[in-house]
Length: 119
Length: 106
Image (cartoon, rainbow over all chains, first blue to last red; front, side, top):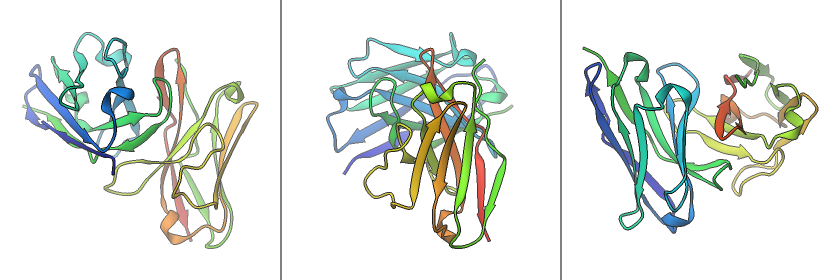
């Protein structure tokens, strides 16, 4: 069974940093692109970033460019999202999701981890 | 910027057919994927590449995409289909989600 489990969320002050992780099992991690998608409270889905299976290709949503960095450790089946310069509008549940391909659909998704940016 | 337009809400009587649209000029040239999200849960893909159903998704869910509109059709709507539904495409190496449609089954 494919499983994705996010961790690392929490409360952080504006301007602070946080590192999210997504640990996966049940499939050959390095064969798949991975994505981060977020959802602000009561709002819709917003894609954040994607990384290719090998880790050499990354793309970001415009508002996080230069602040967030996606990475992966294929030896540990783990995906990361390093978030710096956090702002109040980054407050959201962050989901990791497996990509069917680099530009494919997302299936499955993790259960999400909440990031709250507030003083 | 690339935007996808979905109705905020759609209502359907139990057992009837619901249609949720996702609009954008020439969306017919894109692969459109649809996700269902129930309260407190992560999204689940219900249709991918316009019209394909993942295993485990009932045949009542179908999709189409042509011209300026992609459509998710839910036949024989059940109470358990009440959820938010999002369409999604890729554009210029980034992902665009529609704003989401809340489906209410009456």
